[in-house]
View 1 (cartoon, rainbow, N blue to C red):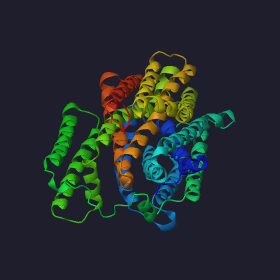
View 2 (tube, rainbow, N blue to C red):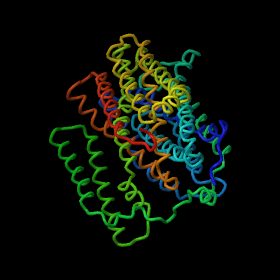
View 3 (cartoon, rainbow, N blue to C red):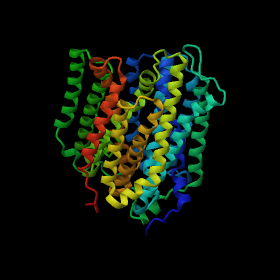
View 4 (cartoon, rainbow, N blue to C red):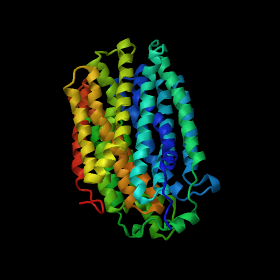
Length: 496
């Protein structure tokens, strides 16, 4: 049997929840630096404050992917329970964020918000692969990208729109403006409503139906056939890398956030060692052996795409937490976080983010499908990444903040390709019964570079470009070029 072909209404229902999830991410990306600085954070504080978000994704996504592959809750299904739980927690975090009266509270709520969004987001990636035939994967991820773009437009532009409707965009020092408050509250309601729409309007295929499609669940299957045969050298290298990072941090007085990265390396090394010992002892398959075994045994195409993701998301994270201070300092001449110029810059960043998201929504449904048919998915993604690099580089040429909208065209094309092409390639190339865990592990290479940027970029900027955040965009442009070069090594079956 073959899965039924979905019409446009079915494609929309499957991905509509991502409209709400992206509202949460867009509010976070466009406003958290502004909130942190309003509550007293300096530019040097931003990297470690943002580090909590990617750390959360790094821990949550593989676990949720593994669990969702093995979940079946009757009528509620296997992916939808995670959509719903994550949406409830994320909506609560968005509602509470404007009440932050201290930097620590805002940082804790960012951690909770990011964890909740990841709980919902990761199963959505696998959900498209679950529900669609392989010949509809391009269309499915294109529609998902369009909803992501529309959600980001709505969320990013909302503070600016509220100001033009008369809502106060200024507040006393240390107080979050009303435009941001109301945006977070409205965003929480929209997120929950959008996810509920997908939960109500879709019906997942049962294990019996997946069996008929040749995609039966592999419950209880060993995590990796050769995990027990792996030597101890791999875990030892991870541990030694973590110890080396700690020593280098102490020796060269790097930012203290690097200790967080070191701890993660050591922790993964120890967990890998435990998983190998359990496999050698013949213990039944567990979550730990499953995740470690699948991570170490990734298919070749996934490994090559992982390198592309590593460079790509390094650039995106640089953009998200540096655009507000860059625009405020270099285009609005604002250094005082309580000034009207700084708040105006924050609203304009929301418009810039809305612009690239709108471009992405249009490109996902028009430009990218056309290019993918004509030149293939690999070359399409290379083109998109190079457009993004050009967009970042243009910040050094443009002087008028209005003309930064032109920069966002390149960024928007890149964003559309980043959200569609790698996942379409993976969903068509990986075993469907393990799509959740593989998507979760793939997102490690979305999260890990963000964590590296959060821990290392502060040290780099302090050493070479103190007080000049615009130079971070030079790093962003260069890493997208490296991503395009890495993408040229990806071979998709059926493409030249």
